[in-house]
Image 1: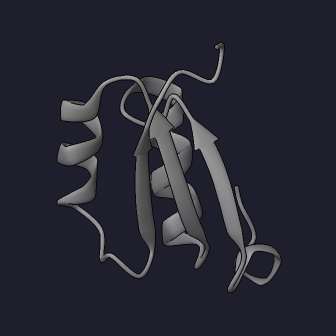
Image 2: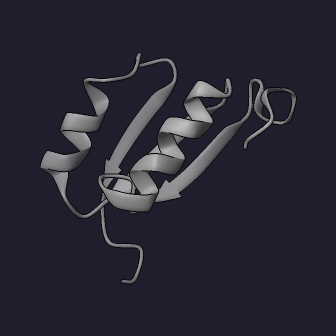
Length: 67
């Protein structure tokens, strides 16, 4: 479980945020009061994720962190 006091008003970068574990981590961080910069190579998955959270809690960027 992620502590609300640990993440309140902090920003976390999550790679692979468009699906799977990255998506679940993104949701948990936002629900705990944190902000997320979500990165993924799949722009459609990020767009879908962005519809579920307020813009002040989630920013997205498309790219490959392996490059």
